[in-house]
Length: 251
Ligand SMILES: *[C@@H]1O[C@H](CO)[C@@H](O)[C@H](O)[C@H]1NC(C)=O
Ligand SMILES: *[C@@H]1O[C@H](CO)[C@@H](O)[C@H](O)[C@H]1NC(C)=O
Ligand SMILES: *[C@@H]1O[C@H](CO)[C@@H](O)[C@H](O)[C@H]1NC(C)=O
Image 1: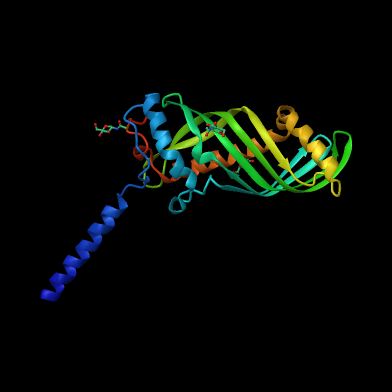
Image 2: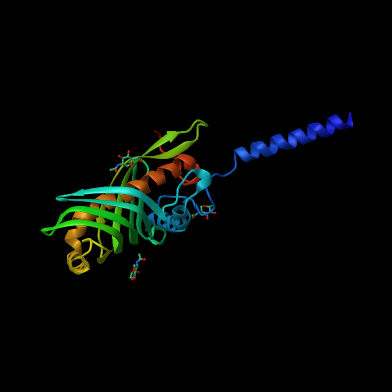
């Protein structure tokens, strides 16, 4: 009799803890939901969230953004094929937040940040560069100083299998202002010819703006694609009502 009573109490305790686990908060502690969509609050909440978010949340299936790894990225430019590989991008967790706006009814979310980004890795380059035939292979580092990224995201809402609302990302566009300066450090542009390699590298750095317009866009496209798909994973995992304490619009 007594044993059966103990068994029921234990069972109840297990069930209770299981139920409370189910309704437990999913959002990590660095998420500080706003009570309105006032930009001042959204900016503060974004500043609070960036370092933890950039580090990645393995338990929620959200990979790290700082550093993030580029296994291999082929870039076809006029006359030259560059392959960037074993790359590592750092700096996103220190981005300065300039503006955040959310229009819940219109499904628009705007984010503007200023970042110093370093991209480091290995490359091969085959083709022609400034009239010279090139067959380079070596290390490269790109340092982007004070670039400004404006992201305009078209959002949507959806329900998960437990009927909880979530933010979704339908599409996005961006502008990228390359900022004050980009510093290229590239070794061995011309195999076996360090003088020519250095001369051309110097030229690339003196003309960084033109060079970056050609070369930078595919890298930035790739980086933002990774960033947005990472945000998507986060929104898939964490319900709307843990991100924003504003009633969700009808959808
Ligand atoms: C939202 O309102 C609650 C309750 O009034 C308050 O405790 C909390 O600090 C507010 N959050 C923000 C980010 O202002
Ligand atoms: C980027 O680096 C420059 C020069 O080191 C520094 O002055 C600036 O404050 C940095 N910007 C950000 C957004 O961290
Ligand atoms: C962005 O990534 C997705 C997969 O996450 C891929 O299907 C898509 O082609 C990529 N878009 C660009 C522009 O690279």
